[in-house]
Amino acid sequence: MYELKLPDLGEGIHEGEILKWHVEPGQMVEEDAPLVDVETDKAAVTIPSPAAGKLVSVGGKVGEIVTVGSIIAVIDDGSATAAVARAADAAPAPAATSQATAPPAPPRLAEPTVPAAPGRPVPAAPATRRLARELGVDLRQVAATGPAGRVTPGDVRRHAGGTQPAPSPAGAAIPAEADHSRAPDTSIPFLDLEPLPDFSQWGPVEIEALRSIRRKVAHKMTTAKILVPHVAHMDDADVTDLEQFRRKERQRRVDQDRPGSHLTLMAFVVKAVTAGLRAAPAFNASLDPFLEQIVYKKYYNIGFAADTGRGLVVPVIRETDRKSIIAIASDIEQLAQRAREGTLQADEMRGGTFTITNVGPLGGTALIPAINYPEVAILGMGKAQEKPVVRDGQIVIRTILPLTLAFDHRIADGADAARFVSELVRHLSDPNLLLLET
Image (tube, rainbow, N blue to C red; front, side, top):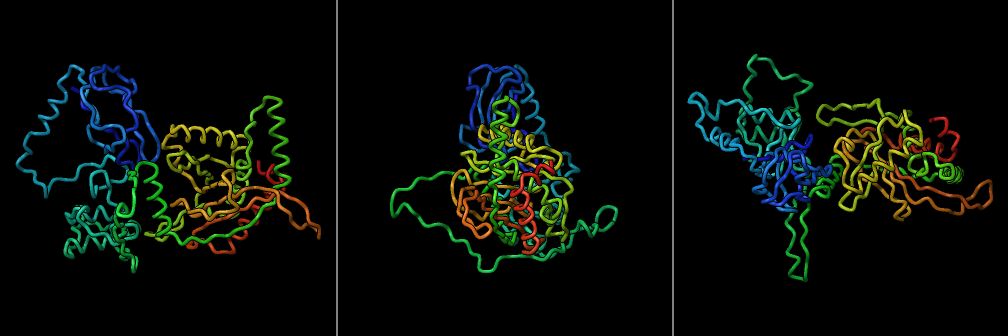
């Protein structure tokens, strides 16, 4: 028998929801043939069968959550591998090894986590996890006082009764730049979450589990709103000339059957944002609250929010400073299509430095978006529409695009945001400036 365990699907992924079984128990499956589709909080993946044989049983039904390392399928491949493995697992440990002295097993993930409940990791910094291991503390038993339920070093020390960590084998101290144990304990005054009432006592209700992408969005937005002091700066861009140029160029490419037939306003905004970030590097950064450092990124990977119907995902367009507007438009089209189909790879949603969200096609005059943490700024696009405006003392009709920059007030001030958005408006108002950036 071959026991297939849910593999490590990527950094920070601990579980997935079963979307579809390609083979039913009792049926035969070929090696490397599609076996099961699993959706994580980052993307949907198809796991192939690792062996040929008959599918004996499955470890979860469609809609159920399975954790990394759990057995999701048993395949009769004619071998006794599983039985041998179980016998080895059941063998007694050597007498010289005890739970207190056994070294911790190497983690499967880039950042080790300890589940607070089946499938749920404990939020804690790597240094906090190291401290817990040194003190012999189970993070699942620690009462968290940090933001967003994060376990702090102080929480670990209090749980251990004030015991200090044992020195390292070499007797060397932990480097100061990596020691988060001195970070102050933080809590939110007056925050006391009460359980929801039983709404069914007033009328019929329908319950839906918060899973996969929707749950990931909830976690990210809660973290962003609790941790980041949001400030918003708003302005309007006159995109009349840009829209005339875009429509004319798109039609020309359609008529000549050339690339760029899906030339959207978003592609021009991405290019304008990239130019603005070069002049305002603070908005292309991240803030480390533990080390109290600002990390300035010298590359430009612009993410855009995509509505998939199952939740919001943010595909990333890489190296926008090196790409033409046509190439950016092509990337947007391909990434958006894969997002709708649920076939985006996890790597296609990592490494972003700045995010743009566009609600214009759905309507609405403006919005105040939430920052895509750990980024420090996000641009919200409203609906570009014709409006009467005053130009040279005359009322004229122009196409106006509302813009909102939400940013982290810890790394930039209102004046910085005003200059950034003003430069963005200037580029969008004059197509020639954007062409110079290409």
